[in-house]
Image (spheres, rainbow, N blue to C red):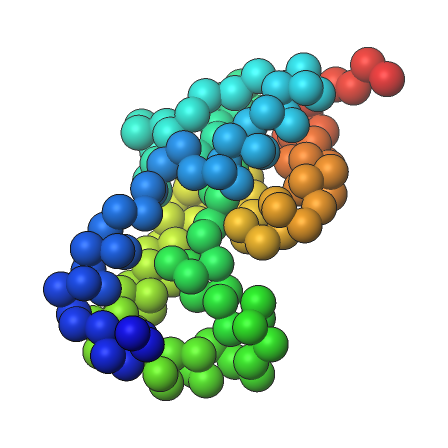
Length: 150
């Protein structure tokens, strides 16, 4: 059965089964951060957007964004734009993805207004180069005042 033949109910059931926290990329990132002796909080509900990883002392919030859910799937698939990707989606899924992107933008703004540094990592980047993702977080932490002991 192709995606075009799948009913909306079946698609909804499949998509609803995808976890929103403790995803494989989040666990990969957290393990890599722990290995670097970086200690953090997880799914921090006290901040806008409930960041996946938070360094409270340095006001650094990290989000692990799923490529599909946060509008990056077009780049993974080699398309020219988000608009091209969304052209094949139903109104429901198009609106869902665009709503997520809008919410991410608002949460970024709110966190920055509160004095937080926001680091957003794509699921595909975490999978492709975890060391680079960890380095991006370490750079944000150093910029926020963390001392290094290397």
